[in-house]
Length: 435
Image 1 (cartoon, helix red, strand yellow):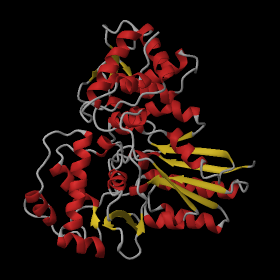
Image 2 (tube, helix red, strand yellow):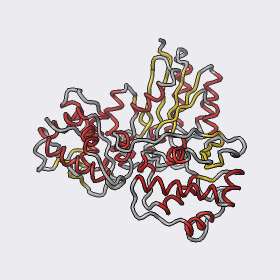
Image 3 (cartoon, one colour):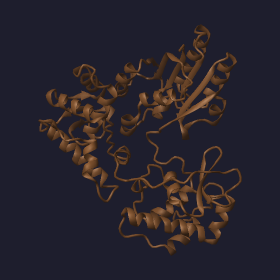
Image 4 (tube, helix red, strand yellow):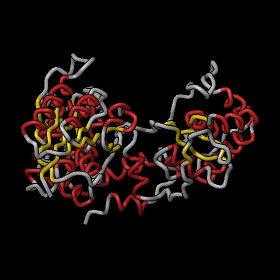
C-alpha cells in the first residue's frame, strides 16, 4: 500500500473555539477520529498528519501525549483569542495543503478534519490537481458546500451533542410558540394528558405511546403529519410534560430520534429524514414528499455497559473510564506516586512515562478526568476548567481499593439521576473488584 495520504486536523474547529468545557476536553479523541476516517477504506498509508492549534495554550498540553502517539505534527498558530471572524489555523492549513500537493506529488488523498465552509475552495483547488478530498466533521457543524465538494465525508461523534438533529420548534411548518413556550398542539395535549407520577421504564414506555397516539388521533396534528411532518423538538416537549425528567436513555437509547424509531413500532407513525438532515415525525402511510422513512428499531436492554457508559459521558460530572486494566494500573501508579499541584498535561505525561508506555495518553487523560469527577483530586482554582487547574491526589486515598470505591460511588450516584435502579453486576463490568 502506498504512502499517499495526508491528514489535516483543525483543532480549533474540533474544540469549537477556545472556551471549551471539561466535557469537551474529556471526550475529544483524535484516535477515534482517525479510526472513523480509516473505516472509509479510501486511505493508503498515512505519509503526513498535521494538527493546527495555538499549542502555546497550556490547556492543550492534555492533548500532547495523544498527538505524539498518533504521529501527528503539531503546527503552532497564534491569534485565536482575538480573531473571531476568521482564525489563522484555516489559512495555514490551506497553505500547507496546497504546498504539499505541489512538493509531494505522491500524495493522492487529502483528509481535512474540519467543518469550516472556507475549506470548500481548498477542496476544489485540490481537485484541480487531481487529488481526492475527504472531509470529516461533526454532522451539525459541517458546512454544506464543503461537504458537497468533497469526494467522501466522514461523520464523527460530537462530544457536546445531546440531540443536535432535533430542529427548533419554531421552524416553518411547525407553528409558532405560545407565550408559555409551548407549541400550540402541545397546549391541547397538556390539557388532555396527565403526567405520570413515577418515572420508571414500564410507565415511561406506556406514557410515551400515549403521547404518540394523541398526535396520531388529534385532527390538526394528523393533517400536519401527512403534509409536512412534525419536528422532533415538539414531540420532545410533549414527552417532557407527560414524563417529568424524560431522557431517551431511560429506554436504552442515546439519541432522541432513535428512541422515537423504537416508540413508533406497530403504530401508524414513523420517523423520516428530509434532505439534507431534517428529522421529523410523520405518517407512515402518507409521509411528506421526498422523505426517507427511517427503519423501526427494536427494544434495547437498559442495563448494559454501553447504556451506562452513555449516561456517564453526558452532563456533569463527565465520567469516561478507560479499560478496567488501564484504570487499575493508572490508579495504582497514582497511589504510589501521588501528584501534587500538577497540571493535566504534565500528569498525563508522568503517568505514561511512569508506566513505561503500558497505557496510552488517552487512557491517562480519561482516568484523571474520572478521578477528578469522583472528587479524588484537589482542583485549584476550584471554579476553573480542568485544563486550567493544578491537580493533587487527596491524602486519604491510600490504596487502589479506596480509590475504586470512591469512583464506584460516584458512578452509581450519576446513574441513579437517570435510571430508577442500577444493576451492580453491570457496574462491576465497568469497575471490576480490586484483587
